[in-house]
Length: 442
Image (tube, rainbow, N blue to C red; front, side, top):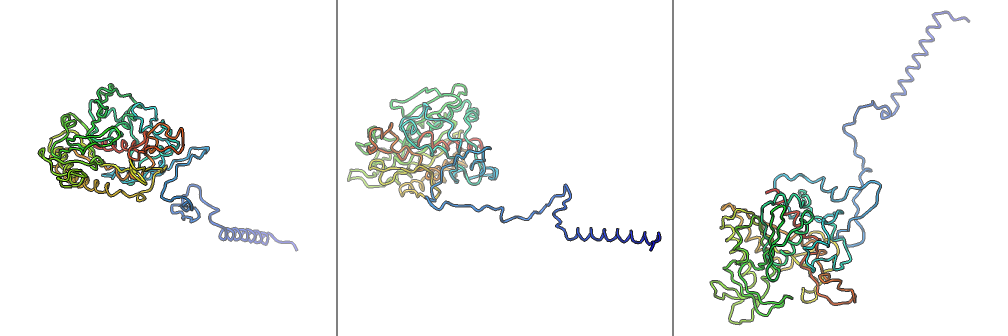
């Protein structure tokens, strides 16, 4: 049968309609994600649980000791733990507790080495043969803010025509060595003064007309000390609780910045004087004197020294540094105590010794009272509380390496260890990071 023209047109329209219906049917049943419009963003993506990687904790080893930073080789330098952590920290808005934080890996290490001429031999652990170097690769990191590393050139620029004085005991001397070594990466200081025993010294940075002094005054008040170079006493210390040590008070008004500290020396046997008359003593052999305890003298001394400072109309900046803990284990410095740890520990792993707790309580109480008076009198008194960050670094002391290669002739050699002072370079360098941050922030 031959179709007419009208029938042909009807069949053509039917075929087109069926094709269109099939296409619509396919589009309706297909996966919509296969047909994304270019440039259209999905503003609320679903979070896949599979993309989250769980935090793993090693099953073995001491969980309280922080592992050393790894040195993986990659085609592209990875972000260090320090950089990864610091980039998520809030900016320094308002006040931040610089003394509450953690030690985190710092692969860049110290900015100076054992060749720094300012390092005294007992603190030059690398030169003395300490075999491990992991203690060099850590940085103090406050929890609520980030602080930059010490910038020697910036510090020197800020300190043009200024005079810094660090006043105290051998830990103070330890600190000034660290500061000088860091600054020496820009300019080498010239020593312009030293006392007979080289305990009090002064240096000058000629390009910046900047002066740094360290003044030996372990009690901050007048004291007659009877002991040899090894710290062995032949008589109780005669300690005058109402007389500031002339070694520093006579120069006091000439310092633009100063750090004062004391502490451990008050544990020594001593006779205490007021108005040149004996009040009592601590651990003395004179049965006619009352035992007053070291805490009595420590509180009296700090109160008198700080009252003198806050009433002085001093126009510079004065830091009071808390005394720092030691890490002697299984004895003290003179009874075979040692310190063998090679990594920092987490906060809470170590506890302050009872004696250090007493010293610290007195320090904080007396500082708080003095700070209130300083504020009223317009004296700029600040606290350097280095206790917590120091307590977490039992690995940072010379130990037996206060001597040059102590086990060179025998690995069983009996040597005196130092678990109080700090290796240089070492953890004490971070004190300068904090110090600079406090100076910069004013």
